[in-house]
Image (tube, rainbow, N blue to C red; front, side, top):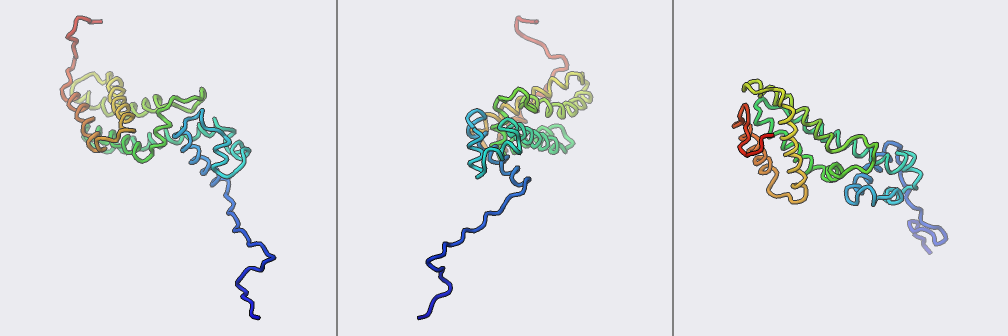
Length: 221
């Protein structure tokens, strides 16, 4: 009788494929991605260390070992997203003409929302951690500081008071950021059209600026 040597003998159990062991850096990156997704979908409070560990296929102590707990993981996720958005905005400001710079800044924020939707959802939520590394408001302030220098030069060229540049920078960046929060869910109109309308309002408003704006209502103070 001929025996087929390719078959596993009945008294032997088939061997399970060995699971590749992750390095510490790989495990940390995996936990960050899992945490990012869960925080974006469920929020900080509704996400548990147990769920994070289960999704990663590890025990809870592994999460504590890498981040000290859920709060530590959340802080790292927020810090990473803040840096990513700030880098995208600041690196986009390369044009010479102020109007194109406005377009580049608007596109940078909308690009981030489109490419890193989970990250933006996390950033626009109020942080539940008092000692958080930052907030969306502080990030917007950082971006406004970059725009402030650009506006200051433009104000000086036009004979306006450059000391007012910080005020206008906050107003412009805030307008784009709030519109981005609205666009996050509706996604209409298309990104380029949203950018065009934002710049239309910002630029034509800036183009027609009065050197000394006046109030026309009864209230003067």
